[in-house]
Amino acid sequence: MRIKNQKDFWAGLMFMAFGAFFAGFGAQLEIGVASKMGPGYFPMALGVIVILLGMIISLGSLSAGTNADRVEKFSLPTLLLIIGSIVLFGLLLKPLGLILSLLILIAASSFASHEFSWKATLINATVLILISLVMFVWGINLQFPIWPSFIGN
Image (spheres, rainbow, N blue to C red):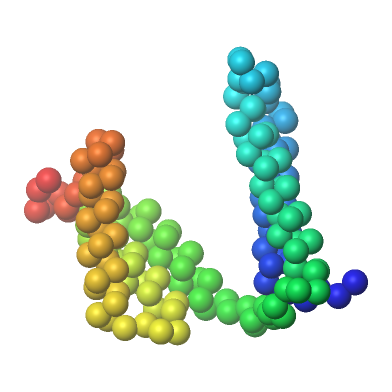
């Protein structure tokens, strides 16, 4: 059996691993029934659905009609830029506020792209900051500091 589309095959395996992780944790909690769900019902159901989705994707990568697609070489600096910018966002949220922290997150993670441009990064940052403000601050009233404390909220 030959893997025709490597990206789909490995993505399917990743889905199955995540699904097994959540289903495993859900199974440790009380599951209950559909009419009276326990705390493990949703993670268990979601985990099983994700496992099934992963199986469909992985099996689809083996079919003859699939486009051949190889996995590119792993890039550790790209991974570190993306994960590092997320960690930096978490560390800077309280002292710098949501707007500046998101700006730093988006600018730092944009360097991971091979098609980086400052114009696209600033447009992306503006749109994502506006969406975050509307959804999280005004929509569901999460208590984020919007600006650094020396500027005021």
